[in-house]
Length: 336
Picture 1 (cartoon, rainbow, N blue to C red):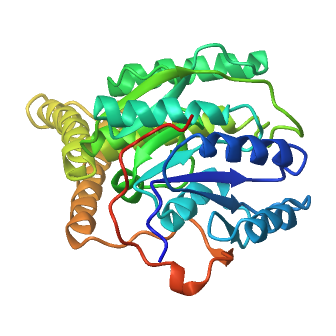
Picture 2: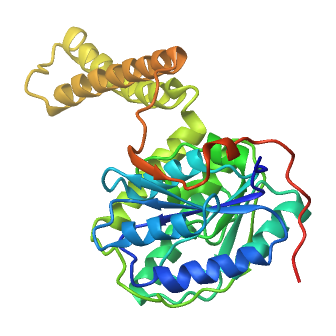
């Protein structure tokens, strides 16, 4: 019976047929230097350029070593990673992109950091990025905003090159663009997070799939969502109720002031814009408090989340009787 893999490498793929042959050969060579059981889990995120057939060929040529999860359509990188994490059998799970910019040989350094430093998630810090100027600038802004708002001193939170323990991968909430915030989410769950410098190369083939004017605004919105989930998910009333109480207090004070003017001094208040402001502030404050109470109620009853992906098929050429999991993973050793 096949032993449980020590390392599962999850690779999301979207239309990367040009770069896949070189990438796959380099990844296999890197894993060959790791003297421990390993597997590659490719997740085809709705490719239309022939990548799917190429990945299935890899699975057939390396039964039990290479598996392919084919999604029904494009679900985005977070959905693809969630599907890969669910399929991974390793004690450790690594992620990297298939465009060739991440260097597979750097995985060994990240694995060593997890084992030797007692970390739960290690990301690769692309100290010298080989990307377009606009991508480097927006990434710098994003990382600065993430550090300032979360307090987590990560210099490259959006790197595709990461190694994490299986329990981390299984607990992370992944949907939308949350793959950009894995270190923040893991840190919030109490896991130990770190990063090490890694090499970064120009794209080896094909074109980037993320040239969108909405990418940066969407990332900022997701960052706001992550901040809410990591700080107020357990008690949304603390945030919404606090803001609602402040706004409704302002509205109540305004209406109280106008009431004194009308009842004590006999002044007319019907045409004053301040009256409308007071009524709106009071109503908005009450609505925010009610929304916070509703959020607390939903959190208490634990409504389930919608899955972030749907699988069409899984290509795994290993015989069914070999899929049992048994011995603990061996200690990390690097082959010569």
